[in-house]
Amino acid sequence: MALLIEGDFMGKAAKVEVGLDTSNKPKVRIDVQLVGGQHDGKRFPYDGRLDEKNIRFTKAHLVALGWQGKTLRTLREDVERAALTIPVTLRIARFTRDDGVVREWTSVDKIGGPPPLVDMPAEKMRDVDAWFAEADRTEGGGANGAKPTLPNDLPF
Image (cartoon, rainbow, N blue to C red; front, top):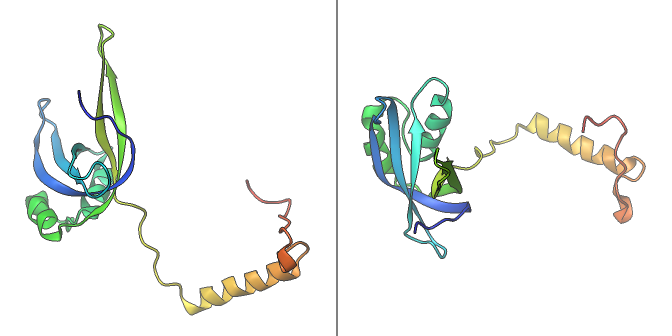
């Protein structure tokens, strides 16, 4: 029986393939090997679709693994050279056949985390500092441990 786990882990690309699937559609397949924790060394598949609808998601995942993003011809070499350990999200995939039989397996759902924050320009830093100072002067703005009062016009 296949190992069924879900959650966020650290992983690295263990095997990279590019080609056509059985339906003659372009695809990238990567075995992602978990690094650290109780599942260290376990491998799970990532299938990236190379079609108009999915290309931007697949490209983001491949770039997170170290691909330079120029041509698929360099994908394997770029990823192997980068040898990055990055965040991955696993999910349990389910498929119900016509006869009612359910198949389940663990699949890589997402590769990479959110993009890193970039340095904040001094002007924007001053704006934020001014907002913090203003929040301290408003009613319930956090002075002496008081809970801040939120304005009534927040969009959420």
